[in-house]
Image 1 (cartoon, helix red, strand yellow):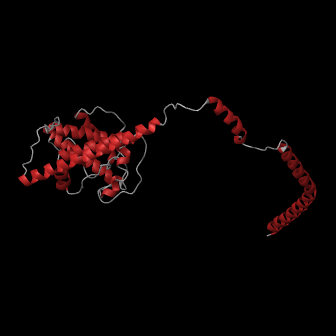
Image 2 (cartoon, rainbow, N blue to C red):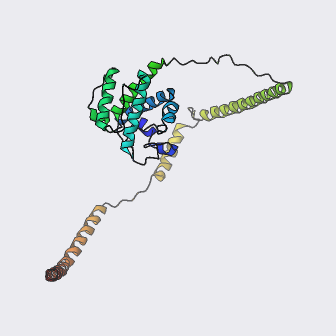
Length: 299
């Protein structure tokens, strides 16, 4: 279900790649992709709570708001996707520690060096998950979404944000609208009309029930007033005329057998001449084929 939700994501006009255009690559399929989609979607909702579109995207000026599959599947420009991941992690760690020294990324750093710095910063924040550092090298996938989810939760805790239980409005007491006298008269007339329609419908139903009861009376046991002896005499007189006269040939299967034998004899009659013609034709075809092969070898 989670997979099918995002298969047509590019139709919404959102950025599916590095924030500069739509991504046309096919989405990966499989039951293992569902939790990753859900993980990044929850992380993206929490980023909106942190107001990342203003504090991160607009202030830095080189990022756009991320789509719901930005860090789930590979983008067209994987290096730009990896830069987005590093920049977002650096901003979140700065929000958590209120310092830019915990994770300081130089623009000339190698990606492996930046990953090592990120893992050291995560250990300082009690990040418990363990996986190879090369899993973060791609810039997308389960491990990337796991790191981002951890950092977002930490940032929300640092700000003191807590999810409270939903508050349901009690709609049991519904205020009745005040109606004018004309509207009251219209409602009364409509109620009277509905009562008349109900009465007509009940009468029609009652008539239908009476007809059904009359039909059911036809299926009851009938008491005959005819003398049984006269009934039997009439049955003996008319009975032979009511029997179906089906004339079946006792030798029908023999006719099929005879027809089969005749067909067999006809086939055997023409088979010998046909075999001779087929043999001559086969010989001619073989000769022509051998000549063609000789010409091919000569060419």
